[in-house]
Amino acid sequence: MDAQQFERLKRLRERIDGIDKELVKLLQERLEVAQEIGQMKAEACQQPLDVTREREVISNILKQNRDKFPPDGLRVIFGEIISACRNAQRPAKVGYLGPETTFTHMAAAKFFGHAPQFLPLGNITEVFEEVERRRADFGVVPVENSVEGTVALTLDGLHDFKVKLCGEIYLPISHDLISQSGRVDKIKRILSHPHALAQCRGWLQRHLPAVPTEEVVSTAQAARWASVDPSVAAIASPMAATTYNLQIVAKSIEDFEGNTTRFLVLGQQCPRPSGNDKTSLLLSLEDRPGSLFRLLEPLAEREVNLTKIQSRPVKDEPWRYLFYVDISGHIEDDKVKEGVEAIRKGCTFLKWLGSYPKGEMVNT
Image (cartoon, rainbow, N blue to C red; front, top):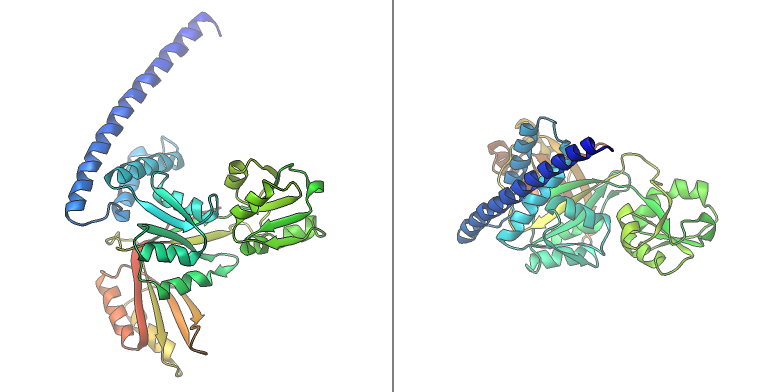
């Protein structure tokens, strides 16, 4: 680099420094406005999180950007700005299925940003308990995987606990095989969560058929174990490899592309309508022919789209089933409200779990 080029580089860097200085001032101004809004919400007994408004903010920013700045980067940047401003209004505690670096932890950070206090909990039931008893403001739990299906403990929690659904997250799942050495010949055991082992079963049979596998409570616990035992490899997230200082033996060993897990956000209040919402219900029916058809007919008559129905046995009542149902729209939408009231008449039990903005599906 000659002297002329060096001077030009110096001037460009000075411009960057000046822009950064203005950005900091604007961020400080934004924070002050957010704190004022937070005070107003507190006086009105409203929580700082407003999922619908936050979606509007991101959408408006992306429209103004017109793809000049990388959109994915802009989402991350403003997601963290919103997270910091929200947390300045009132610090939030978010419980999740721990420990750190689980996919649930990643989903929680994707939804809330990194500003809140995250509380790793031992199992799904504990997450429900912490939210119901208001020891946590929110909770994040997995509800279904595109390969392995529904998480039964989450459906049980939705029945047993008094919480509301206020959001959902879709997270692509990519599993890495990680160990201290990063060498296949050093692996004597492979540990992971049962779902992760199942999602990588084909790869393991092809590449490491003689190595025994063991189930543990989470992918993060498997990574933690591998960090203290050089003979152990873990199937876990890339984030776990970094956190526990492990080497990658093989990347993306899941058997199916597009493997995605849906997570639910638990809270006490549902967001207001956003125009692109989902309503979740839990219900049971009388045991007689055609009862399910008659139940869902009012939704079809009102052109309310049924997006999911999942049955779950009632533990203490043999041969009786609960149905977890997702429909498009918000409970405050007239046709949804009317449809739910119509089907209530044919139910022996109906619980409105919540209405919330639809999560963004991720193309992998």
